[in-house]
Amino acid sequence: MAMENAGFTYGSDTSGLVWGFLFGRHAQPLAMDSAAALAWLAPGAVRPPNEFAWLHFNLSHAASEKWLHAHTRLADEFYETLHQGSRSTRIEQAENTLIAVVNDVVHNFSFEASDISTMWASVAQDLVITARRAPLQSIERLRQAVIKNHEPIRSSVELLVHLLRDQADVLVNIVRDAVARVDDIEDHLLAGRLVPKREDLGAMRRVLVRLQRLLAPEPAALFRLLQRPPSWVQELDSLELRQSTEEFSVVLSDMSSLQERIKLLQEEIAARVNEENGRSLYVLTIVTVLALPINIIAGMLGMNVGGIPLAQHPHGFAIIVAIILTFTVVAGWLVVRMQKNS
Image (tube, rainbow, N blue to C red; front, top):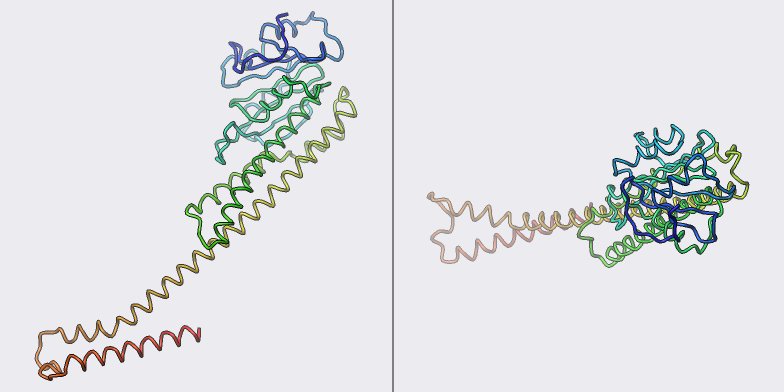
């Protein structure tokens, strides 16, 4: 078999295989291409009990699903989940294997709903198949961890647990980035400056809600799995799987708190906007009321009809100005009094 130490380049081959690793043969995982994977999957191949392979496929490649049908014996439920409309994160048991649907974010995540994508996994005792349509952060973190081999992975379930923890780490970074953005918006708000793009808060909140809805593991499926795991799953692996889901719950709780904080900020910004609009409307009303006497009197005196008062009086202009000022002062006093009473 053509194998080498882990570390080949990123990209799928003609079969749609992005990368493959063989665990358990040496201390360092061995990299596998599609030819080596075919040789390892051959019915007559001799494999030690503790040896397992991880093959990662790009579903955007047309040959990926055909290759899986032709050379692997995956459960039918795995292929069904690839085309299901529901993509909530879950781990289920099917034909003595684990079927996982994991939602993750793409590289250069920018708080857009389109930056969320799905990865599917089939975990058996000796074979782990993962597949995605877009490059994702968590699976890339797992690949880097396998290449560096700082924490040797002893079983296929531990590989899945590592993936879930990497996904939780990615989510922690997203929450940390969102908290920094919210802090900046809050600082501007406390300084009395409204944020120019207030709609960013709404977009951020919608993406966080979508992340929480998609990334939160389904409790019913997980409960069934932890109560009756496959026979080949060791007790330690089952315990680590439970712990990883509990860690994930903590991250989702932090995300819920952040969503509530964003909601309060939106309400505060909306209140300040309404307050400023009310203040502007009040000033406009005062100006309109103060200008009303001069507009009425000027309109009446500007009519080209006979009998205009004070037209021949030597002090007519001064008298009209005094009348206008008197009415303006009275109107202003009435507006201020009404404002205090209200």
